[in-house]
Image (cartoon, rainbow, N blue to C red):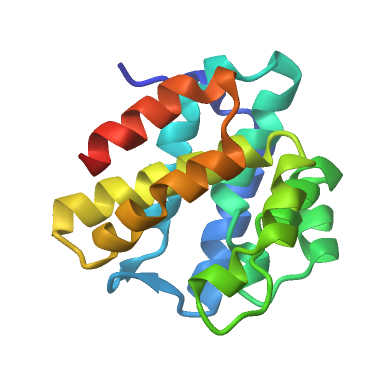
Length: 176
C-alpha cells in the first residue's frame, strides 16, 4: 500500500525540493545515482510508518526524511534548514548530523545518539534512514550490509522505543 499521497503537505513538498536541490548543487550522489534515490526511500519508509507518530509530529518527521542529510552532506547550516523548512525540521536535521570522527563509531557516538533521543521525532527519521540503507544494501549486495548487521544490536539499544517495534522488526528481517 502506498501511503505517500496522504502526506504531500506544503512543508513536506518544500523540504523535498530544498533537499534535492542541495544534494544536486553539491553533486552529492548515492551509489552513482541521484541522491534523491536515497531520500525517496527514506521518505517512503516515513510514510509507511507515520502511523506510529503523534499526528502533530508527522509533517516535520516526513520533511526531515527528505532533509536529514543536508547539514552533514551539502554544506547547509542549521539556520539554512530553519529558513527553508522551519525550526522543527532544522532541530531534527541537526540532531541527525554526525559528529566529527575518523570512523563510523566515532561519528555516531554517545553525544550523537543523545541528541537523537532528545529530539522527537529524530529517532523515527534515523530508523527510516537505516531501513532505506539496509534495504538498498541488500538489493545491491553491498559490503555495507555487513556493517549494518554488526551495528544492529548497538543501534537498536540506542534508539529502541516500544512504539517503534514494527520498524525494528522490519530492520531485523532485512538483516537476517
